[in-house]
Length: 350
View (cartoon, rainbow, N blue to C red):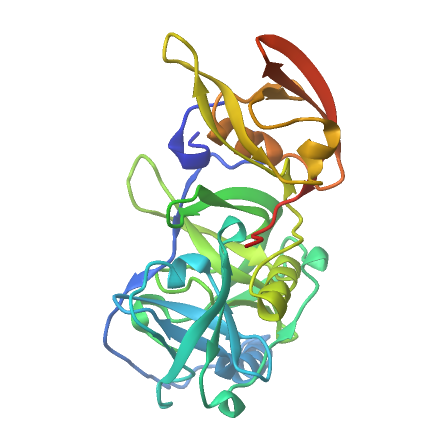
C-alpha cells in the first residue's frame, strides 16, 4: 500500500490500501440545467426536499486558479472548506452561493492543515447566506443514504447520491504548503461520486443535516485514475470542533490528534542513515517536556514502533489519542533512556 507521503513502512491496520487525491478542480466555466420529467420513485420526494433545503447553503469557493466548495457555517458569513482549497492562492477569495447569485469577496479566518480544514469569511453580504444544520457523525451508519453537494469542475449546485460505505477510515490527504500531508481520521467512506471541485462541500443525510465535508477521492494506483465509488469525507463532529476554534481564535488549541508537543527533525547517524527524530524544542509544559524529554534528545521509538524519521513519528502518533500514555525511547548523550509520556493535543498555536 501507499502510506503517508508515499513512503514504504508498516502501516496501521485502519489505513486503506489506496492512494487518495484531493478533489480540487481547475477553474472552469460552464453551467447547465435540465428538468426532464421522470416517473416518481420511492424516496424521490425526500431527495427533492433535502436538496431544496441544503443546496443554498453549499457554496462555490473561487481561489484564483482553482475552485472548490464550501459550507455556510453560521450567520456571520463564515464558510468552512478544505485547507487545500484555499492554500497557496494569491489575492482574495470569492464565494458564490448559486449560479444566479453574485460573487461575495471573502478572506481567510484560519486554517488547520492536519485535518485539512479552513474557514473563510465573506466581507459583505453575510445576510444572504444560510447556515447548514449539522448531524452527529458518530451516528453515521453503513448503508445510510447520502447526497454529496458541491461544485465539481466548477459546476455549481451539483448533487450526487450514494451510501455510507464505511466509517472510521484513516486516509492520507494532500500535502498542504511546507508541512506534512494531512491525515483524515474517522473519515466517512461514501459511494456518492466525489469529483474535483467537490472538496469542501457537503455530505448530507436524508434529514437535511450535514454528516461530513467531502475532501478526497480514491485513486487506482494501477490505472492512474479515480477509483469509482470510493470517496471520503471529514466527519461533521471534527469539522464543527476545528471550525469553531478557528472562528473564535484564528487557530486550533485542542484537537483529537495526539502530539508529543515537540518540534524536531530527522537525525542521521555517521553513515548518513536516518535513526531517529532530534528534538529541537519541547513546548514548555507540553507532553514531552512534562515527562522529562528535552531539546537535544533523539526520539528512537514510541511503544514498539521505531521513529527513524519525522514521517515515522507522525504515522505512529495517528494510532493514539490525546491523554494516552506511551513509552518513548530516546538517545541522550549516547545512552538510551525511556520516558512515560501522557500525550497532548496537536494544535496550531501561533
